[in-house]
Image 1 (cartoon, one colour):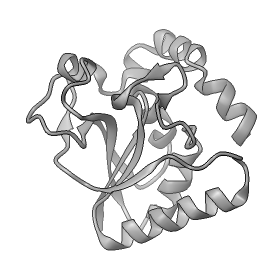
Image 2 (cartoon, rainbow, N blue to C red):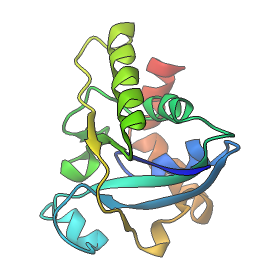
Image 3 (cartoon, one colour):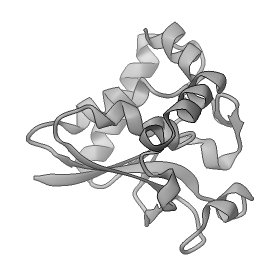
Length: 172
């Protein structure tokens, strides 16, 4: 059965690639969610006055990949203790959040967050919010599959932002 999963993990460019290699993930879309402006543009979101977070929305087949597996992938891409953005990217639009689409996703997200906190991988409190899914607005085409369209710039950004070293240090 096809389902949706929505994750905000800082810059949406960096969230595509980790999910793209898993069987059962049929589509990944970069976009904006969690705000109050209808049909926001990238420029508007960058001004920090729409309330939106950069996010990705996955369409997946839950018979091939389970939601708890998607959560495990998600947690390995972010610094869940950073409430002010991600790595060198600061501001509301770069905050982390899991947007659940039903009660089962909510329960699994809460459970996974609690397990991560109890694992003591991180000494600080997990700051990632778990929120009900809201309208998801697709980002401009040039943001979609950015790592494929601009591989050199993507790699420079991924490493230069601090994300690469953080993942390597904390998550292996």
